[in-house]
Amino acid sequence: MALGWPPRPARWAIGFALALLLVLTWSGAAYVRHSHPEDPAAWVWGIATASTLLLLSLAGMLARLDALERRHEAVLLRDRASLAGKTAQLEATLAGMTDGIMMVDANLRLLAWNERFPDCTGVPREMLRVGTPLSDMLRAQAEAGEFGAVDAEAETARRMALIRAGGSTGTMLRLRPGGRVLELRRNPIAGGGFVTLYTDVTARQQSEQKLRQAEKMAAIGRLTAGIVHDFNNLLSTIIGNAELLQRDLAGGGNTAPERRLQLVLESAGRGADLVGRLLAFARKQQLAPSVVDLNTIVDGMHALMRSTVGSAVRLRITLLDGLWPALVDTVQIEHVILNLAVNARDAMPQGGMLTIETANLPASSRGPGEDLPPGDYVTLAVTDTGTGMTEEVRRSAFEPFFTTKAPGEGTGLGLSQVYGVVSQSGGGVEIDSVPGRGTTVRIYLPRADVDAAFAAAGGGGQSLGAARNPVPQVSV
Image (cartoon, rainbow, N blue to C red; front, side, top):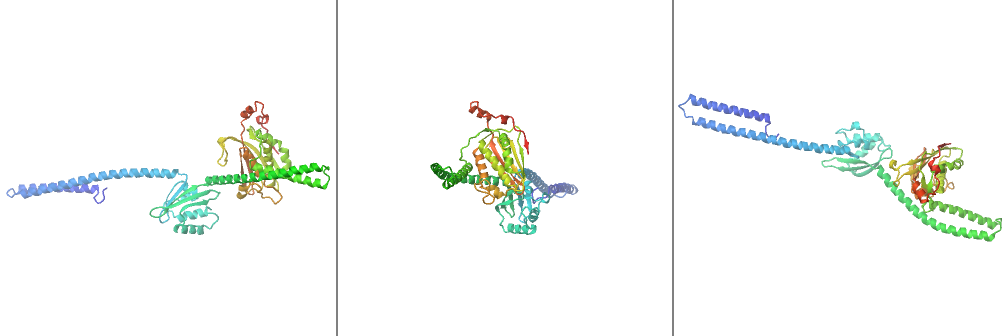
């Protein structure tokens, strides 16, 4: 409807009244002419004609106005349809976003939101309606623990004051309950108020942290390799000259100089062992990978692990039927398993349960936390029910000489050697730990291509009987 003009029913009423007036005018003129034929009737017909023209003009105007109104209504209908389409498209976009979004007006009251908003913020869905005060939503978040252990009223007042002062715009990070990390991007809008986008960046943060950890371990590995190289040269000189002196003395080993020389050789031997461990971490040692059955290796170490962990620790070994063969250095993987068992024992000073499990990990079932090159893997998990690790300890667990044990009770090279051997073998290591509940160290070893290995050996390769007939489950 055109603004400033009478509505259509009123215009039709006016038109009807004008038509009636026209009829009455003509009727009056006819009556005057017939009742007074001797009087001049020119003026009567002039009035009638003028009235007719006037009425016809007014009727034309009314018809024109009606046509304009119809055209205007058609434009309005088209604009409304276009606006409805755009609104539906915007609502579909907001509904399909993986991020949460919220908009408040100049009075800090809720204007709009999408389905992901309550999931990202912890605001109850039942309180979401247009006009809900922002302070009520912040109070609900504080009461739900979204901001940590705080007084809900004081925290709400603090955040509202910060928002009103304009100090809460831009990009911010917030730690949610459960360890999730939320990124907030808040920007003002025209006319007052603001719009906030909520993005869960936990996976991105974890990836960045893994990258930083990998870069740090690589840097430590390069530094370690350089130091170990020089240290190994010194040890070679010490051991060589000590052996020559021992040969020159040749007194049966009973003299004081010979006994002191023997102590020198023993200490140098321990130094050489230390060099080997450091080389393992730096992934510089010589490996002899072969196609092996991990079940056979674990089963063969059962007696050794039983005596190593002691009677206070229960040992449970679960070996998967049909375990794939792995490509790894047999001697080094035995050291890895023994190191993990010793670490698990030390984490359970009052005793507990040590579980060793083997499994297959197809490339198709890899989880997001398993940062490995593409392919199939054989896994070995060592789980204890001990003291567990804090997040800070877990991040530093693979660093050389890092230990939480008392001075003199550990070298801090056990897990670093595990990391080096497995990494050099083309696999990976992950630690999952909860303080007070225990730790699981899981190693991933690349699956061996048995046919390729057999062909490379000219048909006379290593026997894989254990791999083809897996060891049954062992429980102690």
